[in-house]
Image (tube, rainbow, N blue to C red):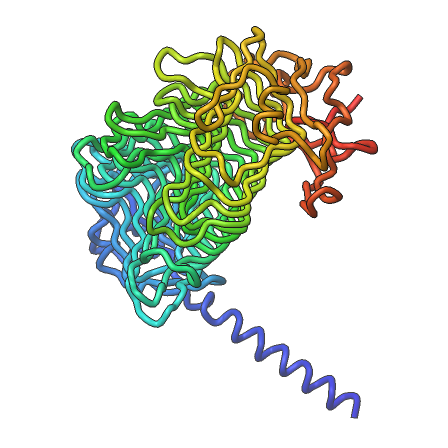
Length: 547
């Protein structure tokens, strides 16, 4: 009996092995070399094809590899359709082979790679170049689907790729169907997207909804987005963002750097941002640096980070924003967007953001149905005067609902406002520190101006808790506020010593325990990776002091 059971088990294991490996057994490796011939079989490096046009004639199967000879340029436009799809476990892979570095797909005009209703693709260790942002008319890598049935095509993986010189997006991943079909499990890692016209990275889907999203699980890590200019001829919407992800359930953007994007945007009602999400659920933006981003002379924004219209259950944390024309950290709701609620901005650092148009280091803008349940805590913001405009540490535009500021450090110099708002309903400040380096304490609250914390407190009821005065206006004793500079390596953000608390700082153990106060989970670490709290009480600002 035991022998029979063992035999049945062995047969079952063999059947499973055959099923799991059958697609791999049928997979084929294809090679493309400038020394090849399109009449060749293309199935080994000894008999390669020669051109992209030959690749486009083939129908590929799950597990296939397409190898381009490293160090060479291949002119044309790669094209894949549904019949070329791989699977999540056996993708079709496009990559380089041999010595000489990465192969280059050189699209004179049009897309570098276009995949229509197609997924299960891995693109790695290969570059895409257009003829220049004002000459090329396509995107570097463009995945588009319009299938019905609310289907989610599984797996897009882009790794170790440079995308530059395209007239539209560097990378565009989009879908358009009323059922909100789209893509699932998109990963973009160790990739540089630069010198493109419309945007660096754009993930988009069917118009906003309150209940469904086109895409699921988009992961972007260790990427750089820079020198994506925006299009001055595009006046129907904004352009020039580094990385923007919309209509997605489950987003993570981490360890990325975005800089010098957006200077040619010409849209008057909205502008570009270095890294941002919109109309998405469960998004996490963390461990990134966004700096020196711009906007056009007729446009707005040009900021570092943004949770925009329709975002919910999302967080921006452990990021460094500096020297942007727009706000460092923006929460915005535009007209017609899905509801915006249950979002968090915590343990971030902003230095000298809002260089144009009077933006704030942290800014909340309600231009639509409402900013609801937004928690902003343990951030550090430093703001000095700009050559144009009047930046502030915090700027609030229009009323909101339950937007709370706790345990933040706001530092200004040269008369910049600590808080600036014309309409103040729905905002609460408790336990924050407001420090004007040169003694020029300025808060505009509605139609009144305040020159001291006690005056603001008595005039508005802010920084009061159960009848007790809270908050402070003292020197936080940071190591070198205003001297952060550019890190340029997001794995080394903890070397940003300028915003650490000195051992004698009065803000050590001066913060609220937000779980006890309001049921808010403050997470388990600060900007620098220290556990929170290290001792009995939380510190104020983005640094939890560690002796």
